[in-house]
Image 1: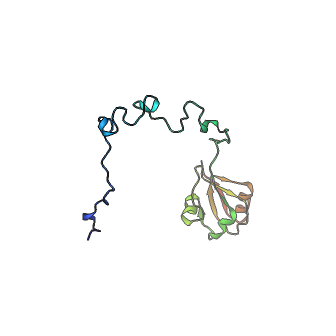
Image 2 (image 1 turned 45 degrees about the vertical axis):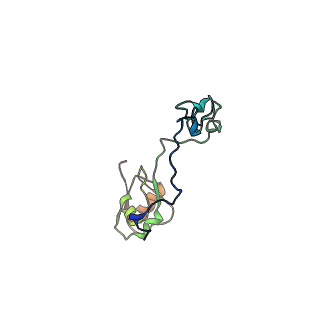
Image 3 (image 1 turned 135 degrees about the vertical axis):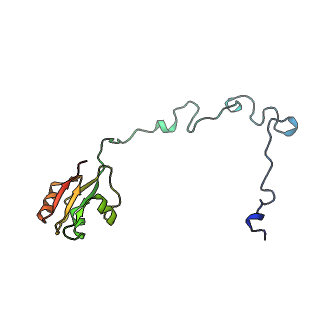
Length: 151
């Protein structure tokens, strides 16, 4: 019966009264309230920020700088023409269609780029942000069209 939500209470000894510091010598934590005598930690508002090392150059700043992030880099989702052969002839494909069918998992910030690896055997209309020259040639050789979206 004790295991009902209405009857739950903490185990005896689990809850202890809050220590009231600075309330007289008889409490055992009077006068300096457990902070010692003088020094940075004895002062009010003495918290130090994360990683602070007492004025020494912090570890994070001592580490060597490494790498480079190109903020102008294009973010395309890439797909090969071989992956387009699963669709029936005459299908009109774009990034949203490919995502809905599960061929790609995400659409890159700058759209879809079609690469020329593999062969395409069916005539498809493919709309993408970019095509490699070989991908465009293979799609058009199969009787399809490769149209670029205005990005």
